[in-house]
Image (cartoon, rainbow, N blue to C red; front, side, top):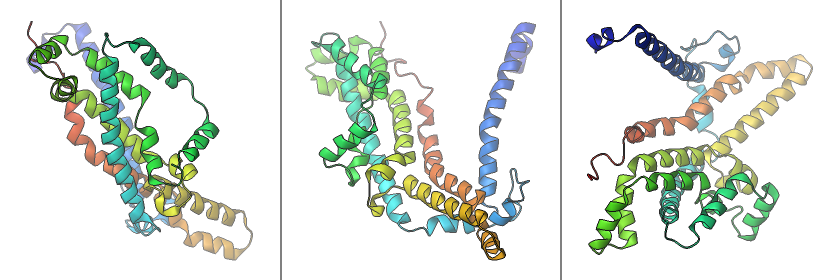
Length: 303
């Protein structure tokens, strides 16, 4: 590798140096803020108010995480988040892939019209009030299925998979049909195995969207025990910030003494909340990262 570098021209060496420098800066811009969040999450809240904490806690404590995990309904919230993320991702990706495979066919009657209708939904929406009325009329509000059923199909994911499927050689499908394979058999035995990169990418995006979604639980679910983790933690931080703000506006020694005892509800608790929410996604990412850079058609067809 070193010998190849010395063989490059001066312009190529400069380009490589600038390219690597930009990549390193981009990585640092992601890693360093995360390390700061991690350090603050393990630091005592009262001490964190002084500032000066960057990548290592000054006063170690687990009180922030204890506060998060002792919150009411935290166990049910975790279960609901896992349920909606697992079921929503598997069902959503599979159904979107089936629709994308159908729309990639050039012989299907009305394929352009249906593709246009799918794309139209990306540009315009009915608004939040009609959407709420639709969910209510379908008896989905205040149920666990409001997290899964409305998001089974994504126009963006569908179009991405349709574009990817179109790159797969038609020769594979024609050969399978000559062997008596049905359309569903072609989809399951040929298209899906060759589409692992796009399926892994879409699965990651869909899972992150489900896991981080707090809006649905906050606006379409009234029962506290049916709210997912993101909604529960968002409500917890909102309540604590409201209490803290009211104490800061109040006058008198007693209130400020109460404020001193509530320092763990500051930035340290917020950072612990962020770590709790993003940790499962970070843990799952390495298992599917290898598919991102892989090509689906390498060695599959030789013409």
